[in-house]
Length: 425
Image 1 (cartoon, rainbow, N blue to C red):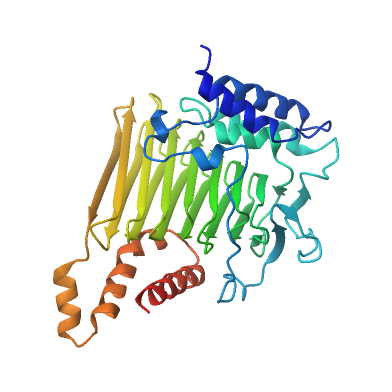
Image 2 (image 1 turned 60 degrees about the vertical axis):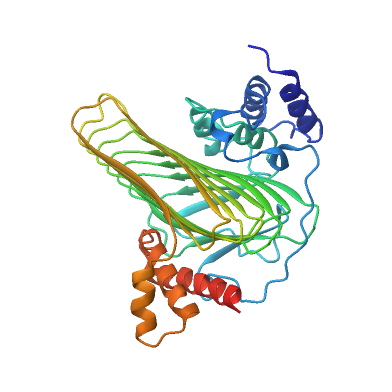
């Protein structure tokens, strides 16, 4: 069916503003993604999965500007022993990065990978699979036009985290990055991400987790007030594999984080969690789609949003259980803490189950600070502001606890505490 003319015009205008990288092993995947993008068109507010989030600033031909935010605190993860890979406005910074070498993992840049490369069979594959049954055109645009990214093949247990660091230096930067991670059988890796990246950021990460291997991912997004971002994680899980991701988002005008996972091997485990802290002109959207297609798999979705001064939070989460996916354990919870009457939380939890031996549940709540808890703390001498902060931290605790590393949990809580202190001050 032909696209409506306004959608077609917007799509072609965005494509015309970009340059398709020529040649190389990724060329067939890029051309395929471009054809899919033209067939589906860029997202519109009337699209089912965009009715809560207006996509105009994410799809416009010209990126909206975003003033560069001068951070007044040390970068998160800065005290950890880690391998640093730095991008500035979407451009790899070799001087600020460590050597791309670490035992148990092969690392290369998308922009420089040789024609014969293992990523040839994976680049764009999981993204293309993730277009069914819900179209994700911003991800197709990314596969077609990504200028760089990191390709990782994990062959063993990586001793220290790999930290992707994104700096925002230009108020008009419009970055598109595409990462590919292949975790081979028996491998295990932790990837950290932090930084605002660009005025507008489009990122895709494709993660193939083989049998009996593990992928752990923790990222923070912020604190630029005016930044916009659309990110996608596409994951495929093998037998007895583990996939865990957590995201903390602070500030930003518009953030859309999508996570699309396929549990294809028996006894796989997938946990997707996030917490966001929003104030004022803040719109944050978590959209998750998990497909169970194997026996005795577990998935968890845990999302907490703290909103004030008219901020908006969105959660769209789905668990799809296919007929042969017996003994599925699927859990989904999305909750918001509204610190005033002007903020709003919009939720669309979904279960679609075709197997009969499953344990699946979902829930979504929205409310204000617990007055009984507040009274209890104030009765013990705590000022109201500090009491509210403690209750806020307790509210997001379930999501933060999805991070296995207790040290990382502490760093995340420290960032939340700093955000609360600034707002209280």
